[in-house]
Image (cartoon, rainbow, N blue to C red; front, top):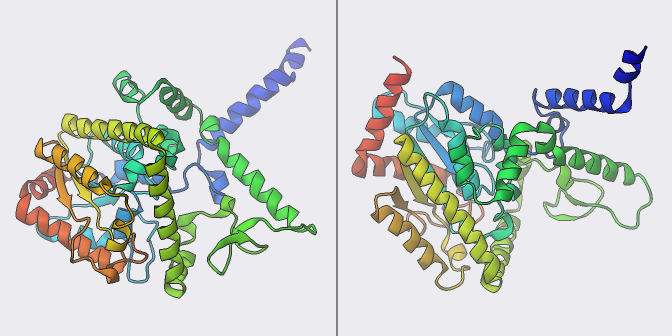
Length: 398
């Protein structure tokens, strides 16, 4: 009888419930399946697992600027997919073998996330021997995401990185170590915002049945965020599930997209220019993890290729004077010291206005041009990259 009382007391039942929830969350992503925003909004965890299973020879990391290599003629896979089909086909022709390439990019990916992705996919026996990092000035000046865990992939990636002492030592601060360890060991903690998004979204939709003075802000059929009854709440806006909707925006209202990114870039540079203390801290974080990524590739004998991504002249001109010059000098210094291979395409004249969907992201023709340029540069200037991929492919399939 006493044992029954102990087993049914509130603390024990709470512990059992939490353990059950922890086990359940480790089986998948229930909030995402229900259509609500989750910690793994860009499906990075699944792609890391795919990488470990398929053992590709090349991995792409970075933001959506490089994620566009996945898209097809219809614009599908602009935000999704695991492989860049056209780039992969070109690399196979160049190598003379069926080498494979996985795309581990995600929207708004910052340098700490690129480093975390690389850590996650290289802590296996077989891992990519070439990492192509598509980078842009934004990653170093947008201090909205300067704290590592505010990025959209830090939490989900934490579960896939080994918490060994060397890795923990390389994290930026004690607060970062704490956040990483909690996310790594506890799925309940890692997914804590998922439940908040789900309850918030459900509550807002229920409240819309009442005679409210104003509707909640949604992305509607007019492709703009504003108070309206129909459309997607922030809690239900999941980019990889909205590809057709996103492509529809591009086809029907391209000026909306251009204006949207124009406003965002202006706001980002204005903040960076006027709030120099926050900019300096953000720069410190990004440069710290960029150095970590370089050291990881040196340790694992991985070729690191940094691509300064193409951008339309209209958007380049938005940066305050000196910003691009400083960024380019920073990258050049690293390349000159043989830390990585630098491919500078930021103001390549071959990418004209027709190469972009919105001035920032490449269109399908622009993405094909990028794939062709990268492959041609590999063949002409860095044949060792192709040889390394070919060797690794033979080792993986012997």
